[in-house]
Image 1 (cartoon, rainbow, N blue to C red):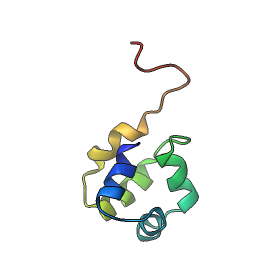
Image 2 (cartoon, rainbow, N blue to C red):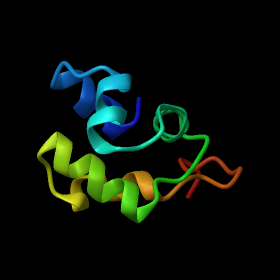
Image 3 (tube, one colour):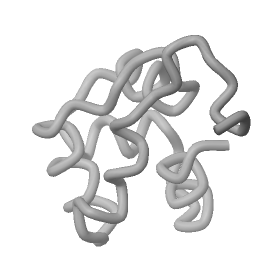
Image 4 (tube, rainbow, N blue to C red):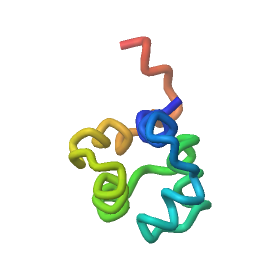
Length: 73
């Protein structure tokens, strides 16, 4: 589970509600939460504001694995 999804669930916010409150498309939020797409800086700012966290708290979501197993460093 991604950090953003965990934060959202911890706050009891639905994906639809978070997307609406942040002014982003739910399908984009879903793609970010399911690691099919990178979190854009502008989207990160909007989500952080709604979740009442620093953008830095979401920063680890901006880096996605590009096909390799990240545990094999």
